[in-house]
Length: 193
Image (cartoon, rainbow, N blue to C red; front, top):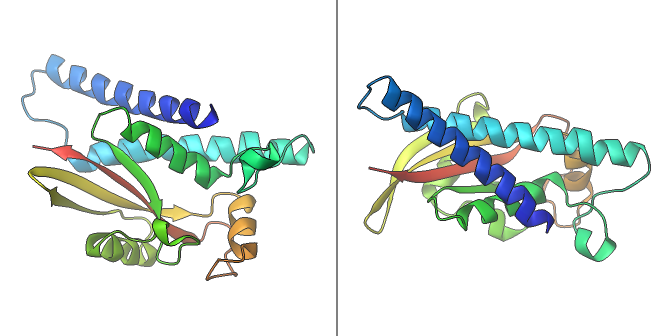
């Protein structure tokens, strides 16, 4: 239930944002679309806002009040998902909406290998955003007969729970993260003409 709600909220916000941009462009009489770099920035802004709000106003607040905690095995413990898990679940739900939009977390040193880079583009992007977290790594990739714009944004440790989880996880390759360190990347991709 939490997974679907998170995905629907994020997917709905992205769809509304993209639709309103298209309507505004049509009203202005513009024939050219919005540059994919800008679309990716908008989607990333929504993701970051959602993640920051969940991390600080839900997870940390409830932990401070000793009401609930988040944990990797949240279903079995009856607690909240970690902020990274919320983003991953939202990404899965968004993908299921059929918009062609994909969102996922990845890292050069993932706790689980499935969260590592899927290809050389992602590896190069993660290396790039680690060196300069202010600038996303972008490009056009081809999958089958479709072209996708792909952007990799630096994924920072946005809350103490991110740092604590990664530094204490038995499968973590790195155990000295600090708040706001780059931990990996948020990958956003969508079809382009």
